[in-house]
Image 1 (cartoon, rainbow, N blue to C red):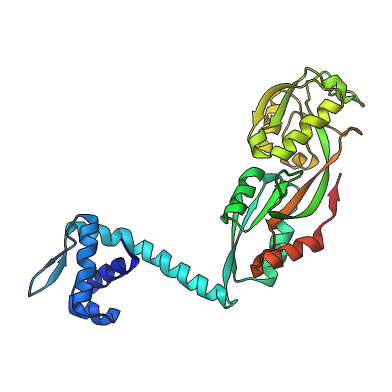
Image 2 (cartoon, rainbow, N blue to C red; image 1 turned 90 degrees about the vertical axis):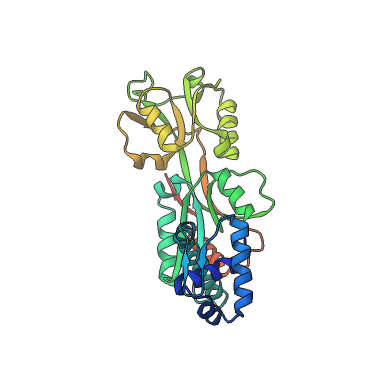
Length: 298
């Protein structure tokens, strides 16, 4: 099935006259008829009832018209957008981000400044895991990724660190250690731990595991979760302890004691693009991010 055949069908279905539709499309009537016949053969249904007096849509033709109208609008919009983008008049930017980039206040200032400079550009924002973003960026399904550091397998990407924050210990308020002013990480050996799932952010997961292991912690993994908010919720419910970036405090969940420990390092959030990116809007967004980097929070 070709787009041209659908366009021919829509013209005939609107005018209900092959001669008028052919004139509108700038083609001969036999060529138009051939397009409609090819479409009917492809679909395996008759779309029009045609005689000398009039042309009418069949029931199947009416259904097909309703279903394809939106498709043509989408195609026309995509063509117009592509042409406008080529002339620097309009376009869109697809940005993936981790949820904690919002919690940490990293994403909003970048979007705000970009929109001031390019108000006509449509922003498509998608909350995704770090690993999903890197895959989508590599495949061309997003233009910019905002991810959790550290990363693995970054040969194809340009990395701009944006923000660093302290890791903190999360304890249920009822936990025996929650009232202590100082806790040595080694005291958390065999304590039920809640971790972010490795497939969501491989580099971050391995970094946390190695850091805890080097501190003498024998991990007892109670649960691995998909989202940072879920991790905090499970700590709040008393299912275990966790280590997380300090920006999770903004979730304001009850029943959690937050502990700053000197052994816990900082972790970062970074903007990632494809190497040697030439898209104008990606370059502009990256430039804005580079001007704002090195923000940190304790």
